[in-house]
Image (cartoon, rainbow, N blue to C red):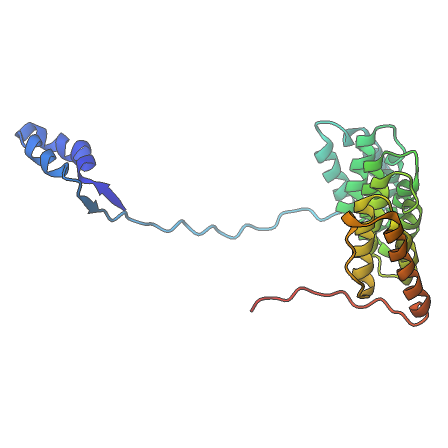
Length: 266
């Protein structure tokens, strides 16, 4: 650390030597622009003591009548200033509270429905997957709620989620189709391939590209580079036909390959 001598002069030396009449020559010497090396003492921060884990594990037992009433009372709180606290309370109540959260998926508030889906993910509530699939398939539901329901269902039980992918792939809303095409890459089932192939010719760019990427990930089938931006509808129909032809030849013997794992740098 370097400190200008003039700065040191003004801060420290001047205060000491002003009484002795030495200020002028001392500061004149300091103004020459030299610097002093100053050693700053270093003290390592204290080592924090080990903090005991006093967290309370989630409930593993069926809910008592009082706990059930408490869970029901938490539902309206999934919206508003206390929503994060209410979500944490459901996590603490454990998977036994999943039936109560499933009720939230039919409540009028979109915020409550969305937070109920998020809470199912937080508690790993696999028992709620069938309800999530129905929510994802529901055409009258808000897009963001349907999309989140699909994402959570895929992460909790990807095998069951293929049913929702099939429905959402045909939805008139391109945002819904895009999420279906993207999430399909996490469903390692042969049945998902024929769902994705028609989506390659989708008129919406991000739907078609997501479907192509999912197909490449699931099959590792090498095709020519497809430039969607310069393609015509006929080009994209031809791409889909190529995939149909490949699938007809290989579907009997094809097996989903093991996912590629990123290499670690040693």
